[in-house]
Length: 308
Image (tube, rainbow, N blue to C red; front, top):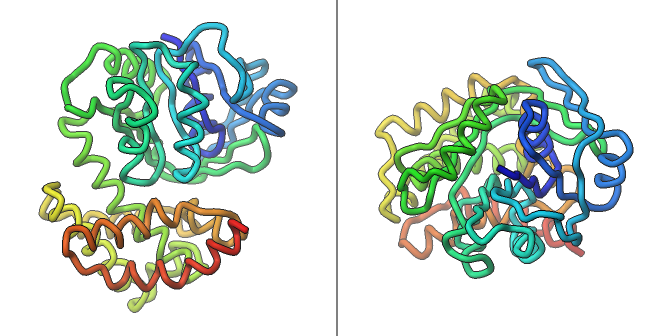
């Protein structure tokens, strides 16, 4: 199985390196300084679970044709980069290959299907706290790494079973859940309020979760996402709100979401794919989302400034 990794940041770099270290046939698809670093120094993982360096690694440019087409591509770019990335990877993907999106948004499969063949798109998600220190250097600071993926019709396919086996050989906790859409929404319920509250408070998770007012804000935000999911026919666990708040409590106190880090650094963020998506989908379903509307409105000027 030939695996391509498109987007070599905290997610793609970490999981791609773990797969490559275990002997999987992995090619990193990158550009600019990241591509230069991979070709000259390989990739280095700094992790709370133990670090390692791989050098050399297989790396090609994002606008370069692969020598052989990929059976699987792990797509780990920012949510707003998905359409462009899909057009670039389309000629690299085997006709019977599959793209596994690992972005934080909820509608990446819907963005991919019009560009790729429908059978080339699966659902996916991941969980870990990691980020890029410098090109080719990834730091994992918390949360047990987890990957989930599944066919969009939820049938158990041979190709995803092979990918599951590859991740398990790499020592990564991995699952093919019974319903990938439900699992993606469960992740969305977790990451979106964390991103939004972190971005507007500008403090790590350990600070805002300990203050009753900001903690309550996060809980209401979680409840709003659950209500939107329910209106769209996604039945989550009855205790999903309580379990999400518990997950926040178990993360390292200095944890931040990638959206928060991008906003803080004045970079374009996944505001539309996360906070904006809750507002948009809520309006479509007739579900009020006042906390998300306030967060979205407060962050939108920063987002537009960053994109200029």
